[in-house]
Amino acid sequence: MEFNTDEALRGWADEIECAVTICDTDCRILYMNQRSRHTFARHGDIIGHDLMQYHPPRAQALIRHMLATGDTNTYSISKNGLKKIIHQTPWRRDGKIAGLVEFSIVLPADMPHYDRG
Image 1: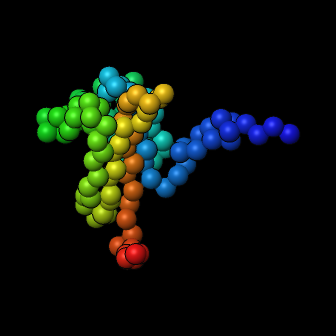
Image 2: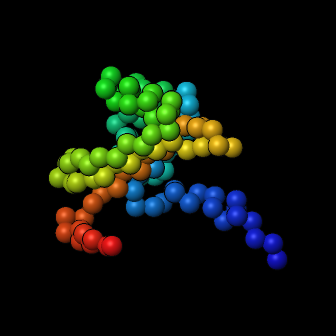
């Protein structure tokens, strides 16, 4: 029996416990998983929209920088009583930057930290 990786991974991010948002190099939103759509529900269905219209100028400059250089951006925020880590990184197709993906992960208040050497 042949294993179909594409089929096995289809929808992998739909129901995970973090928000996943993907855009292309034109900053057009291509994908939002359930958690991401819930987070941005106040804007309606924004798939297909320009990501830049939802970001201030400083963030727009950072988005352009990541698309141009391949750099990543990671930071933490507090929002609605929750602490989150945001990780934004380019995704590639055939070695070329094809857009950005953002993971927004709620951090548990009592999250352990380990130093491994």
